[in-house]
Every structure is written in structure tokens, then in C-alpha cells.
Length: 95
View 1 (cartoon, rainbow, N blue to C red):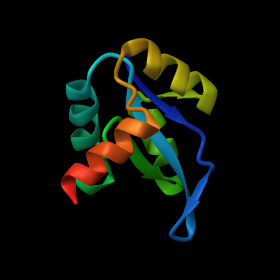
View 2: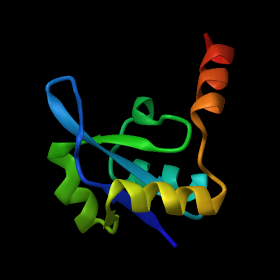
View 3: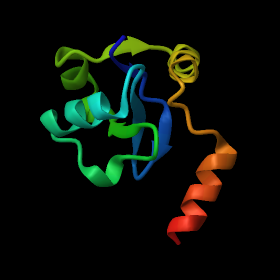
View 4: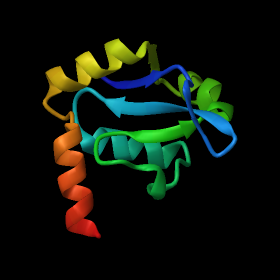
């Protein structure tokens, strides 16, 4: 159990991005993100987005590198995964 990070592969804003998740609790995820200086605005309901430039630092700080499939599998198993349907619904509630 712990913090997981996938390879930077998601293009946006001129860089590639990783997902940072916890497979045990959102509180653990928020604590890790705060300790590593990830901005709150990079939180997206069940993960933080992290730019490619931060990948090595986040791994050095204890995030376990996994492929995207492994990340999603472990996130689902933890019960913390937010589905696309839930994501749309929650974003609509905020708008």
C-alpha cells in the first residue's frame, strides 16, 4: 500500500503528465502531495496530476512507479477510484 505514480504520458500545456494516487487513502495522497509541493489545483477527485519535470523527485520521495494499468487496477481495488460517470457528475455539481 502507498503512493503510486504512472509514467508521464498524458500531454497538456506543453508537457507530459503523470497521475499520482494512493491505494490506501485520500488523506495519505493529500499529505504526500502537500509534502512534495504539488498544488491543490492539480488534484482531480482521486489523483494529482504531476508534470514530467517532477517525476524523478516524486519517485525519490517514495512514489512507486507503476504502469497506467497497474495504477488503475490498484486504485479500483482500494475503492478510491472515481469513475468517468462520477467525475462528470461531481464536476457538474461544482459548476
